[in-house]
Length: 236
Image (cartoon, rainbow, N blue to C red):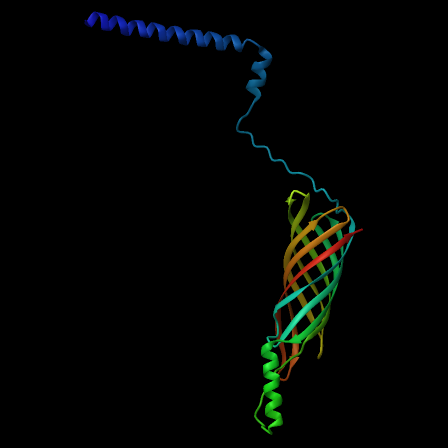
């Protein structure tokens, strides 16, 4: 019984060794082709390859004309302000541009502002001496020089209609703000995303902070507002 078991084990080992030798021989035969061996040895499976597609819309030394509209958050709590702007950008390269923009502001009283003014008018009509008139100095227009940097770009499948190139950008600017009381220095900083639909058509979504000083009864005060705009442009 023991002898037959030992013989069975030895037979299994012989068969396994024979199969390994045959496989090794087959592998050696496959490797006999020197050209295949060289190509196999030159492969590096750990090598990383980065592929970046070029921008589909050229923006080297090109002008862009645009118009934009939007809304304002912050600023004077008694006013609701909407900007309408026109701008000219010069793209030095796809990463840098400089420009100028002019914005016109339309203003109207908020519900809170109207309530305050009506209360002050009613108190004055009733002969009261102790009443408060809201302090309002509204912006009318601004002119600024700007500079923008576009560090990130990509392409977007737009509802399977077309592939659109886009750039994320940051910008800063400085200029003058015209107010009911006069003028003030103004500066802005923010960012947005630009879409380049064709070689001549663009659009932008932009959010930025803009600061200036207005004039009220107690003197000058700092005002900050968040400006959000959507614009369309023409690349020349």
